[in-house]
Length: 338
Image (cartoon, rainbow, N blue to C red; front, side, top):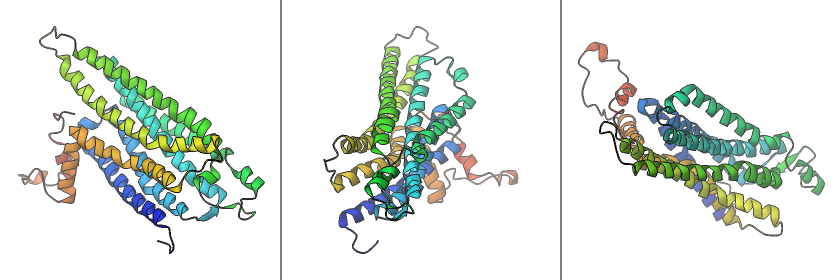
């Protein structure tokens, strides 16, 4: 670390490094688990993979860049702006992935008999692509002109006429954009919509669970019981996302509506750590709340980290010798409960 770095900033950098490692490793495990587990390849987990990819990018790209600019690096204005916009794109993709997950679970409960006919893998893939395209448009809006360049020119904050600035998020990103367009337009409404969707999901599930079983051959309780358990897990993911990102957006509102108010450095660092830390918590939620993920994580750990073969037996014929580890991991998953 650079000499003379304040202790608070040094602690911030150490925490960011730990979060980056946890984010990358944990979310790579999520993608890997879906790849080797056929029963995790439905539409909901397609959106979960999209969310995991965004979190991997946060750990591998955004956090290192955030650490770099936190030490007061001087860069070209548009280079700093591109870094800030990358954060916005990934954040927006996470929000839209969570919204897609909420709609998907709603349809599973609302139209269980026709769900697979309505929500096909192709439509799910198109939905993921649409979410990323919208995220790119929303996140790159500052690159099209909604930024602080003119303000920096007016107050003489540019280091040189070559647009060199001391890179920081609030230096290049307009608070008008962050509050009015990003927060009030693309963060708060989706969060409120998801809250309403999950309330409706829980209401419909409990209504179905309270019904009396009239056909001894068809028991909806098992289906809706699983849906309730998974809905609780995904609602927890949404709740953690909200409490991780709302503090920073509240600070942005204070900055815009109360320019004379000061945000202490420790509070700002804490809010930033919360936003980045959210990328590391989702795999932990999946591991503790969803049995299929927990089983997949355990077997990946034993097979690829500890080099233990869970099958514990040798192939009996030469033609089986080339069977991959991934193939063995795919076995005995389909009957796992959520």
